Amino acid sequence: MMGCMGGGGSRPFYASLLDMPELTPEARRIIEAEAQWRIGWGSQAVNVAQVRLYQALAANDPAAMLQAAAGIREGLLRLESGTAALRAVETGTPPRQFALAWFRDQMAIPASEASPMVMNDGPWGLFWYHLTTMAFLAVALILALLIQYARMRRIGGLIARLTPTAAGSAPGVARAPGAAFVASATASPNTGTASPNTGTASPDTVPATARKPWSGKLRVAAIFRETANVKTFRLMNPGGGHIPFTFQPGQFLSFSAEVDGKPLRRAYTIASSPCQRSYVEVSVKREEKGAESRYLHDQVAIGDSLQVSGPSGSFTFTGEEADSIVLIGGGIGITPMMCVIRCLTDRSSPGDIFFLYGARSVEDFVFREELEYLEKRHANLHVIATMGSVVESTWRGAQGPISREFIARSVPDIARRRIHICGPPAMMEAVQASLLELGVAKNKIKTEAFGPALGRAPSGPEAADDSPPLPEVAVTLPTATAQVEFSISGKTGALGPDQCVLEAAEANGVAIDFSCRVGTCGICVVPLKAGTVTMEVEEGLPAEDKARGMILACQAKSVGNLVVEA
Ligand code: FES
Image 1: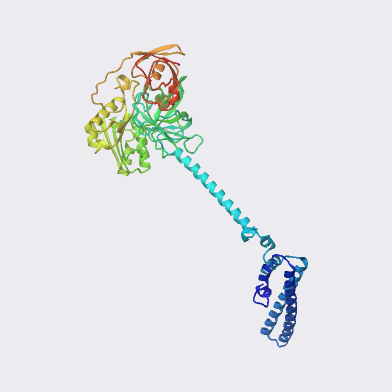
Image 2 (image 1 turned 120 degrees about the vertical axis):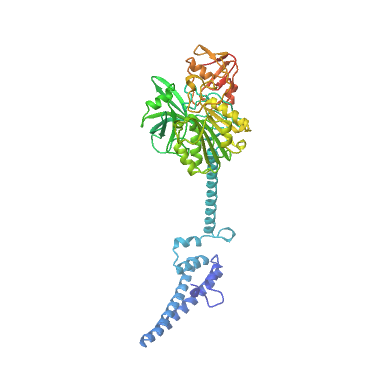
């Protein structure tokens, strides 16, 4: 195009046309002159080339033929450009538009693509096509940035919700990192029941408002016998897939059932690792006096559905709270410790894990093979067990209670470590006393106990436990000094100084709903009409409810008379 539209002068013809936005008389004159010249020159060039072509054909000279053909082609192009220019002048087409149309025609650019090029000029000397494209790209870029910003905000919110915090670590899970509480079970001492009902919140306990735990049915997928009287129940989602909640190592689930027409509700610590999302396991010791444990051991079979709610509890350790952990467990109090050990080894947590365990006998050493296996695989796991009585001749470990000496020789530099204790109350009292003597600060000790309601050294049949004999502990069992009146039912009962309102209600046949029994779920909340109470754990009681005179029945204790609306 440049060749054929180039004129004989120093400036190409097409370039001159681009400088002519309007078809002025002057432009018309110039174009007509150029067109006439092109038509004349082109016609003459075609004639001359034709003659040369005849001569080349006659001489059978291919090179001359090609040269003649090129001459004809060039002449025709000149002729064509001239006639096109004349035609454009006749139709009044602006020169610039004509030049672009010619350019498009010669370059074989489709009209649809080239059409924007012939649109009117936009501002700043740019074509509207370019401006529109740039505007479109700018809008698309802004939209992409806004979408990205919104996504980052949503991800940030999600992370904030799922990241363990002082108030909670998983949806619907009450958690107070490092919270310590002493606990005891109402009716099934040492049954693997984590139904703590008294508590001493540690300094880092963080109050939280009541949260509704997950509640629903889980299917019994497998049952494993661990020892003569301990079974593990593996529970799975009836619909398949992951279990429908997450939990922290050390939390527990509440189980509800109706046995012989009576509603039962008991809590059991989760023993499986939270890394295992396909199932959750609880290990339960069968107690002759424990209706729920007998029901689970004797009646529940694979394929049955169990009503479960939870998880609850703040006796947790994820590996992030301290660089090492000392776990001290007695009897079936091993279950929360197994959950922590399984979790930390699953995650290859690098900190030292010391597990000091006391069992009544080698036969009662729950999870012994698994612990030995894990200890071989994980150099940072140290399992040191002591048996109350030893019959097995191959036992090379310690014998006797978890004493101060046993602790001191098992764990180096114990005063600087975080310590979790779980077992019957008497064992915990003895172990705590030993730890204090070894220089461990109180706020480094986190506890959860299984035991009778009074939270004292058990006596009589309820004291039965798998942990070894305990050192002498001076214990004075309290006597009931106060009364609690239940205003709705019209019943009145004795209230011991270490007895909570919920236990007094149960003892007198007054129904108060409950779930966790550790002060976190808020289900046992009742109005206090008269008297004053103390509550060791108040996580499940919002401040506004407390201000309105509500109490947690599973936590409320008093040495004075009470009137409770129940
Ligand atoms: S039973 Fe959960 S707070 Fe009392």
